[in-house]
Amino acid sequence: MTDSYNRFAELYDKLTFDVEYESAADKICEIFSHEKKNPELVLDLACGTGSLTHLLLARGYDMIGADSSDAMLNIARKKCPEALLLCQDMRELELYGTVDAIVCMLDSINYLTEDGDLDTVFRLCNNYLNPNGLLIFDINSEYKFKNILANQTYTYETDGIFYTWENDYNEEANLCDFYLTFFSENKDGLYERFDEVHTERCYLKSEISDALERQGFKVLSCFDGYTDALAHEKSERLLFVCRNIDPIQIRFAK
Image 1: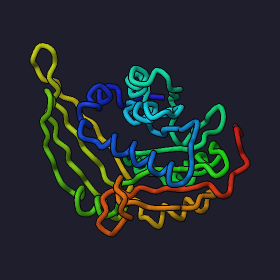
Image 2 (image 1 turned 90 degrees about the vertical axis):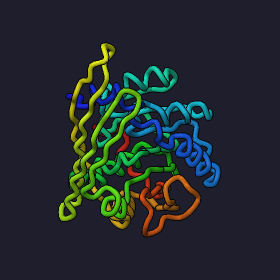
Image 3 (image 1 turned 30 degrees about the horizontal axis):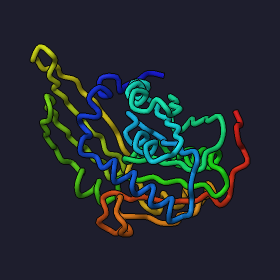
Image 4 (image 1 turned 120 degrees about the horizontal axis):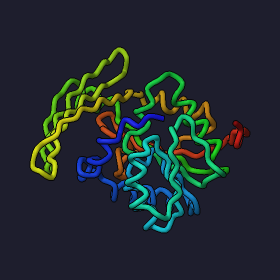
């Protein structure tokens, strides 16, 4: 597997310093409590550099992290030596056993851009969840794609890094390309340029719900991000809380 995140992984934590990891971890724990679920083993799907994995470990959960980027996982291994970390694409998830809960945060589901990807991932999640297990994930909403991201260009500067972020949203295809150009300061004071292209798919709330139902899940709640408010028409991030009510009997099939 080629790893397109090698250079990006080195800067990822600096670029996401303002991400609400603590709020996400608090919300996940709140959901576990509300659903009377005390999971012993939790999978952090698309765990990246392990920031959320680390916070959930600190809250007492045994953790597995899975991500398609080995460069990201190399950083996660330093943060989370107690966790089992697997280099796996979420569409090809293969665990050694089952888990009590799966979390997949920071719009990782939006990176599933091909038709059928949603069903594949939700089917695999059900396959590796214990009965009545919880699946918790978030997505960038249709409102955010159309009104916040759209065809906007942003510039940022932080801690020796300057970068531009240009969005190209194709509403007909429901795809948004993110063109990122970075200038990163080296130890000698010179700046090195590199470029990244990322693509996310805009999913309607109904598309997500239908795919979950097809794969044996019931949506328990849908929140406005990591708040206690329910999702509404101007929510930028939708947080889904689901339970597998119809376990799929294909466990550990090759």
